Image (cartoon, rainbow, N blue to C red; front, side, top):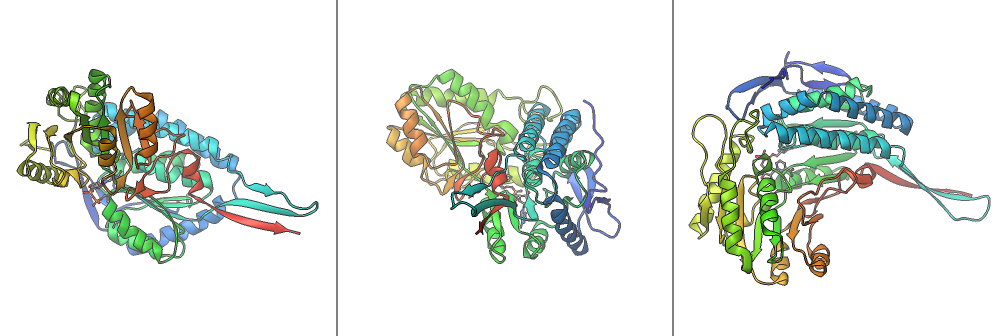
Length: 479
Ligand code: NAD
């Protein structure tokens, strides 16, 4: 196990300068596998946030005028640096978030791929010329919206910051990012990649602080023209209300409650292998995690048994060990919340097949848990668990399964397993979700829109749509 240097002491990046704890409050960062401190992070003062806003205003004026080819070149160089520093980035993500290093390496590779995609897209932001009488013109211009205030969660400590900075940079916007205070080192290491790739200092700022104080300050400023948020539905709703005061554009990547519809005709063993790995990825702390497993009656008993056996066999431990298949939860709040949800589900009649308890000792570990016959009124069937619990229920017909998938106010990722082509089309058409995966669990590709509907949010990330959401259109009529 190589230990990367964990240094968040000078973690604020404002106007091209790295700032430290002098005259600022600090916050301790914990290793979730041990519960021990890793470092101390400086928190931005109000004056720091004002400086970040001033820098972002200057950065926007400079960057919007920069050739798209130059913006793309900076992103391509950033991608190369992320690949060069992949091992350091992956180890930092494991240290501060807990995920197994193999998973973190996958996250870093996907992050570099996204940067490369945006590097190419930066030169493909096209307007339109409308048909008019000779000698006259109507044009539709695409222009960058302006400085972006972005906030992201801790669950993908490398990818989440890039999903915020990279499309803004491609579009010609400046950005102030507040990543999670619980996973700052990965965000800092990513910002160093942008800096070393030649991104001008004023274009991207990194701040940490008390989340509510930072978001209130940045969103109240007339400098900020867009909100971009990845996190929970309640916080998302709160931020949208703040953003309404200045009518700013918004991209909201909020929580989900992923339904999984498993039909009698699926390849059962393959489906189980795929689903169990995906369910417990990042200890279930993924916005598109498969959560509610609706299984057709004919295979219900075999499915629940096979799922529980595979879950019970998973190796839990420190993410830095190559043996580990599931690491700890990212912070002490999660095991507590998951424990309460399981207790409630069992009280309302669910059958516990395996797991169900936090692991005693150091770190924030929770055993992979499988519950069958979970009543619809159990809390876990209605609120996003964000943890290592699988909730299984039987269904009879395709229509029942679709109704169940659409029952909740969420609509992020949905999964279906069936070999019937006609049914695959019906599921794709009728499930209310931003992303539907059929016979696969992969929903995230750099070139495909990633995002939700209903209370899971709006304004996709990735794909050309992720850049379009950083643009405004302007019609110009010349006679
Ligand atoms: P939380 O809602 O308190 O925090 C989630 C993230 O939002 C954190 O990174 C936090 O720094 C940030 N945040 C919180 N309040 C904020 C504010 N007022 N302004 C700006 N940012 C703010 O929850 P948590 O305990 O850290 O995580 C659990 C919940 O978060 C889960 O139930 C899940 O729904 C959600 N979550 C979602 C995602 C996602 O990818 N959609 C990722 C992580 C967490």
